Length: 157
Ligand SMILES: O=c1ccn([C@H]2C[C@H](O)[C@@H](COP(=O)(O)OP(=O)(O)OP(=O)(O)O)O2)c(=O)[nH]1
Ligand SMILES: [Mg+2]
Image (cartoon, rainbow, N blue to C red; front, top):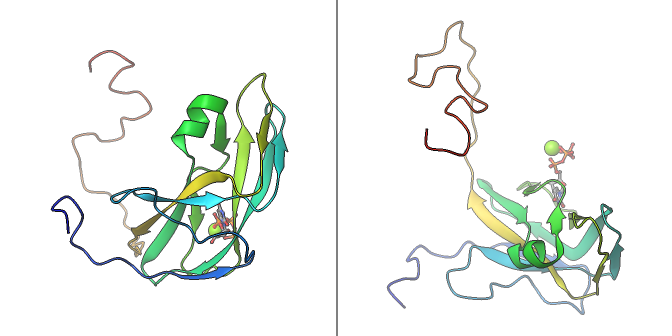
């Protein structure tokens, strides 16, 4: 194994293919964080239009994991294709079809996608579950309640 490949074991995710003619999600390169998702249908998006696009996949994540549906940067840069709810959250308990809420952010050009095109990427991560414990006062911090640009704009802070 290359020393640059993570030594941690891969996480097994059970997958049902709802569309037998399309492949399982796959990583384009070793070390990639995102496995590409395909559309099972042709999609045409006018400027500003959005659509819920099926991937033909249903998965069972192990407890303690989440799968996040991220845009592909090449399609975003070249065509303005993004995802309305990026990143989409696929819960470990979800057994339905993974769908991608695509949106065409280009102000002028329509986007035409064909069945089998790679439209998004799925990033699998460990996730913590929190216990929300109510208190009257929060512990002090250096930032305090400063936010929303409190350190300034584009220039150095
Ligand atoms: O991009 C996405 C986002 C979500 N989902 C599926 C998996 C996820 O587990 C479920 C619910 O998503 P979420 O919790 O984000 O939506 P919600 O509006 O809160 O719906 P719900 O009330 O069902 O939780 O929808 C997708 O297939 N693609
Ligand atoms: Mg929810």
